[in-house]
Length: 576
Image (cartoon, rainbow, N blue to C red; front, top):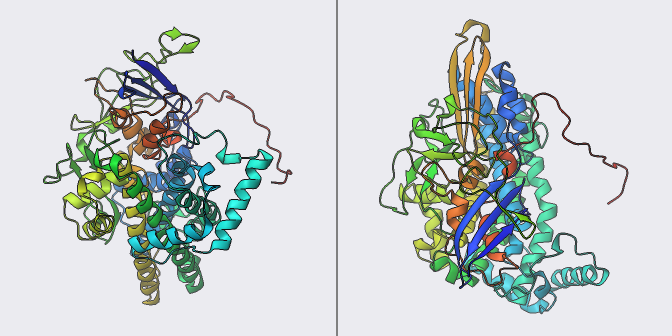
């Protein structure tokens, strides 16, 4: 007899996500539904505003990827009015966005996703000297020097964990599914990963500082404007560029000496799941393209991440991306609408119909009707996945030199076939591969900026006379955010925003079924997954977390009429 599992809320993500899954007598998932339970409405408050101001509001879409929403909004306006930014501004924007990437990806793996692979309790059983051996073993696979290989440091972490357990203060490690049979790392591997987990908590501050050097602050940077950037003194000051580079070099060491080896370790120990395609899902991938490498103009530049679409896991063919083929459907979303609409014509009119049946005190989603606040994006009438895996798959399929080199190296070092990419393990590995690519190329960008400034080019802004251009225009800002394809579309009439739509990565991935009843990426990725213990759905968490969900990006609690939605008291004087 089938069982209906409800996981609500999914924790260790940004926002509110509910997953419902149906498993058969063999504990295999045969159906799944993804639902966001909070309302999106931020596009509505942008209507009627000066388009040049939208970036400062649009960045509030999320508290994590603030800068990337900021840039996309600014670039949508630049595209509408054909404003080309100077070289220094392009490089600085790349460095701000690149800093977000390395910060976001490392935080995701260790603090949001690692506990799906790592059994904290088993680390207490580890032999610290054997843990040193593990550190060298996996760093060697990555071709790097281990970040830490000191028995005394491993012993200190182990003792710290013991004190947590003794005092009953497990903090972020509380209420895990410890001892679940689908944990596969050895005690020493668990201790190594936990040590890196704790060290990454400190190191992530350096990546945040990197964003703040050129962004002004983090989160919510404020140095980007229509036409360029305002961080003039930071660009002109060699000491500021040198500080950025020093922070990057150290963080890059952690990526290569800890993050990559840990992913090799997890990938090897969970190789059976990678080989059988657990979590593969749609196997169709979309990339808008991202990170301009030259100054040839809007959507004409060569890109770090090439655009394209790979369908049904076929690496022999890449369909060129066309922004005109993007649309959003609301058949199973709590909005009004009866057909898919392009973002320029998109509408965000709530139509909440509630949940469905109630059994044994549990209200289940009305999966035959509307069941999520997230819309369902489609590309050329197809459902697709976006994100680091999509970028690596499309780049690999297009034979992009840089991406092919890094992906091939990873697969060769791990002695893995390319098909392992189409899995939960592959999705996690792709993010690590991408992080190494980003850390390496950011060094090149930093030197490029320093060299360009030293040559005498101090330009940071293209003069733009808003009053002299046509006040009726439309444009879009398309880029690859850490979690995937991000687009902001703006229509301007009489100098004010007439319509605004943002289609974000977690909208693509976390969406419900569409008008043809086709699954979204989260839903499809769960089908066929074997759950060892239905009361401990570790496998569901592992696959969903591999996408790094950001439901706050996809939906927002906003009341456009100014109604109070809640009050919170924060004690700022307490010590931690």
